[in-house]
Image (cartoon, rainbow, N blue to C red):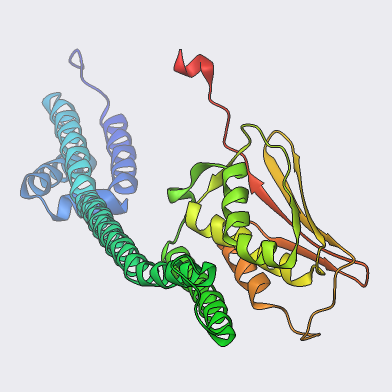
Length: 345
């Protein structure tokens, strides 16, 4: 009589062979083989399990043998899976460490780039400040003696303290005054060009400027020539019309454009200045009717070239129209942005 819980020897042998087949397939996996090869406890569990299977295949077994076979099999599976998981974690750790190292290196690189940009910006600001101080010093050193020469030549030409004594002296005085004013204009142009070229971004120093004051200042600069030649400058009636830009370059732009307009105007002629505005820009046009031709046809005048360069540095441009009957130039200035009253409130 068979004992309770026992199985037929053939059934045990078939079960053991099936278990051996499944175990062989499972042990043939790469991760499991690597796990067993790297762990002695797994090797011991595999040896015990294989021994139990061999005993079951060879001959009849007692009931404890299937139980032992099952326990050793489960132990082997658990240990192998744990070891395989641990091996996978160890294999992934270098990659994680490498990614962490790359992130740290990129972060350090970003910090270095930010520091370099900060130093470059500081050096640029220092250079701009030094250049502004140098320009102001040069302006003072050059304009002061020139203004003195112009002032004294005006006094001598007016014969305020008595006659000069000879007509040639009057001619000399007039030449001194004209040459001094021309030299003063060249000095102002040079300072405006150098200061504008030294600045990488003109919008950083742009300010709100009154266009009517700039036009009157430019007309006053040419007042002696305008009076001597009997010219008329028609200035538009501007009330509170502002533009944005740098004061020195825009002043020299208007002075140069008026200088060319006066050069193209016949004696007792008229220079007309028109302004057209919209919400964002102001279009300024200087026009001369019945303009006289240039002395050097085919060459752009220096005054217009200087004005064009300064306008390009301000982010604008110049359109010149020259035909047999008239001459005119047009440029566009930006208007200051309207304040946001809701933000201010």
